[in-house]
Length: 266
Image 1: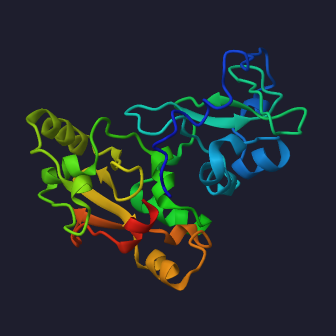
Image 2: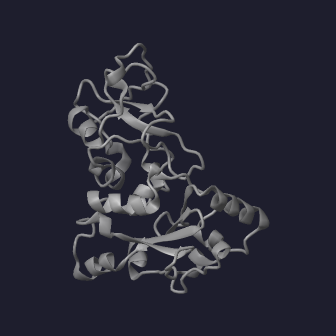
């Protein structure tokens, strides 16, 4: 739930040396990014090998808008990609889709610097966008923003003078004192004002999103806990699975929290 930690790349499942075919001389319009729902509904895009959470609950639920996503999670400088028509033959890759019955499946391409990117949203804007489209923010942030590598939330909270929730299992919250090199790296991110994702040790929330001097905690909230207690389908409203609250640098902040729901999804 919100976990992409086991994936080496969303494209790696179907992009092998034997599956790639780069073509030339396209009609220009054919190489425009396809709206996501259109790619699946009309162009044979098939994400079944990404698993239920990744495919059915995320990629196939993206709105019918055109934008680019991180090609891989947990990278400091990820490339971006989108689906394009099978007619696109320049800088496009035609994968072997396997389960798709469409004889002309969608290609994909790396996006150039001028393309619209999900990561262009600030975190508050992305939260609103997820609510509008009923998407799980804990998953979306991992395909929107670059990530801090080699360190997780417990390793960095000291930078903001925060502590991990006491209710959190000890093996998940204990960390060594922050080293000068890491402190310098975090300060550089603060100074850049660029948005940065910081993951967890389990692959599930809680996460942090750093945006300039502000730090946002992402974790399961009261709405998810109520669904657990009532025996309801927790995926009936994905946008309510997680809460996003500022824990540092904002006029109003909250303390990092842990939920019983965290223990149920580990």
